[in-house]
Picture 1 (cartoon, helix red, strand yellow):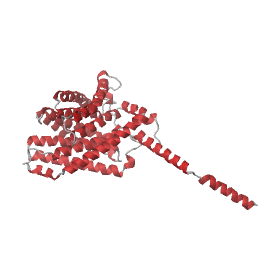
Picture 2 (cartoon, one colour):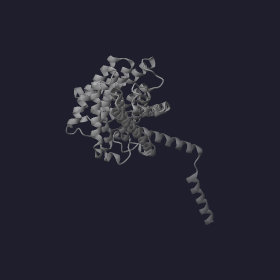
Picture 3 (tube, helix red, strand yellow):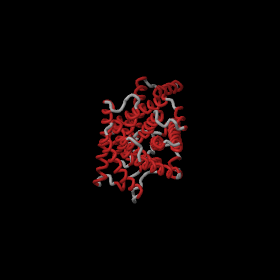
Picture 4 (cartoon, rainbow, N blue to C red):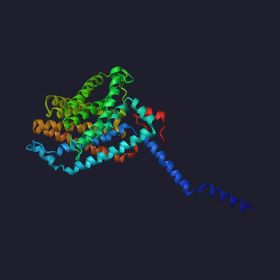
Amino acid sequence: MADEESQSQIELVIDSSFAVTPRNQRGRSIFIGRRSLSSILTRFHAGYFRISLSLGGQALLWKTLIEPTDDSDIPLRHLLHMLHPAGFIVIWSIALFTLIILSLLYILRCVFHFQMVKAEFLHHVGVNYLFAPWISWLLLLQSAPFVAPKTVPYLVLWWVFVLPVVALDVKIYGQWFTKGKRFLSTVANPTSQVSVIGNLVCAQAAAHMGWKESALCLFSLGMVHYLVLFVTLFQRFSGSDRLPAVLRPVFFLFFAAPSMASLAWDSIVGTFDTASKMLFYLSLFLFTSLVCRPTLFKKSMRRFNVAWWAYSFPMTVLALASGKYAQELKSDLAHGVMLLLSALSILVLLGLMVLSALNTRMLLSNNDPIPSLSNQILPVAA
């Protein structure tokens, strides 16, 4: 009798531990899926649009390189004939697909975690990357193989992408001017130049449509604030240096802004004149200054982070500016600089794509400094 009782007890334990119905399994998988999506949305932020910025800029670079020019008699220019137009289509398609995925994720973040988006807007670094989605769309619009400037679709899309940039300008620049919540001397950091780049990209896209006055308006708006921001960042007021070491790759934005300014001015006046050359020389000097200080980026390179994508877009814009400079000068030296910077830009992008593929788990890191305020509002799911 004692043996029968012990056996019945064992059977009861087994039944209570492992009796899982298919309905429970489905419910558990749905719960895990929702928790995983919530975890992604809480870690995701506008800073991930660095990826689409880099890909969009690269698509524009490839389109520029494969276009016919009047300097084909330069020997180094013949090397560009090795680039097949199909490569441009592939890069543009990848950039479009990536931007769509990132945009959908951010829309879901706005819907389900609006408090986090609000906190990101109040973040001194995160707010600047709210310009990045619209810059990315404008870059893809300018390099689109099937949408030509001076057409109705181009005009409509230009307005759709530019209006959010202008709205952010009014909010952020207005607070700088009136000493509101964002006192420039305390919130200024290298990522603040993304807002300037946004205005310059809008100006370049407007110039391609032939809207010279609109382009000049946006260009002047961006450049005036760039001068103020550049001086502020150079002076380094006490308490203003609040950029974490992991975000030091964004220092490359120092030469991205003048490079973009030279391209925008070239589009407005129709030639790479003295003003464009001066801005290009400034960007080359700033690029050389940063490259000669590799120890500045030592801490940020210890572990892979999405901030590494900040290296790619500035390199691409500098390569674009060097291409315009080479077309104007028509010399072997200028074309050599263009080929060197273009090759470096392509290699940096390929390297980042490989590293991102090998470190997918680290793309959505819990230690990302940008959403630090957001995580205090809503804890990140385990």
